[in-house]
Image 1: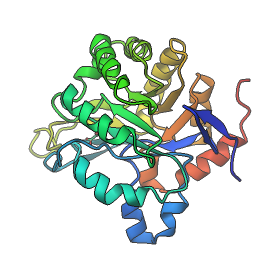
Image 2 (image 1 turned 90 degrees about the horizontal axis):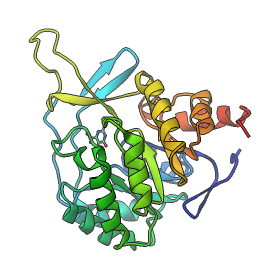
Image 3 (image 1 turned 45 degrees about the horizontal axis):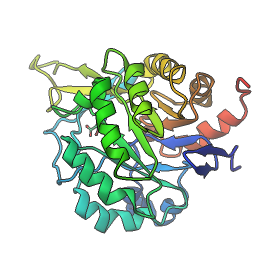
Length: 292
Ligand code: RRO
């Protein structure tokens, strides 16, 4: 079954289910399960883990904490940096049969410019997702929390590329819809939400924060209702397409987000439990009657 095709930012996608950045690693999966994995992903487009200009080790361990209905991560953007990602990972990812969306993050505007200039024109990359919403590094959510700052960033990036620009906004802001409106006015082609919700867990023995980064980002079913409320608010305020995510583990969860106005739905934490979950979710979604 190929699903119901959908248009998104000039791309013709086979169905509405994609992955959330950082929740599926096709390169590691192909090392473990063989090269066929790269060409048979259960998504209609693939979003990369966040790439930064410089290589990063990420946050000190522990980096994960399990919750009754989800998990918390304090990964801290570990990645090989722009140059090695282009040299080593992009050639492998370009073997996928689906469009590649590169997720990028800068700690200041110049770094976003470097990333957008380097990746925006590449034939292998169909769109860029600007991550202004990582809760696990000190300045990760500053731009994404402030409509003015976000608008300024998007305006500047708009001048640098014709590639579709998706802005991934944070739920850890007082008014995510205001940030989305500002991104749209500045030339964003799409909005994605939600990133993880900041949380804290204490080590039961030491009574100190468990995660090496102190706080982390909550994901999974625990944040589903929060996601639905924010997606609903954003979709009612912007005309550009929305990629919705947050605790999606069934076709019903995806249908809820689409009925609130989302064009695409991203599966995140559920990929860790079942790497083929997106296929099941897509099949379930196809059996549900959506609001016309
Ligand atoms: O790497 C991370 O810690 C991370 C990122 Br970039 C993000 O956008 N969201 C998240 O929960 N973790």
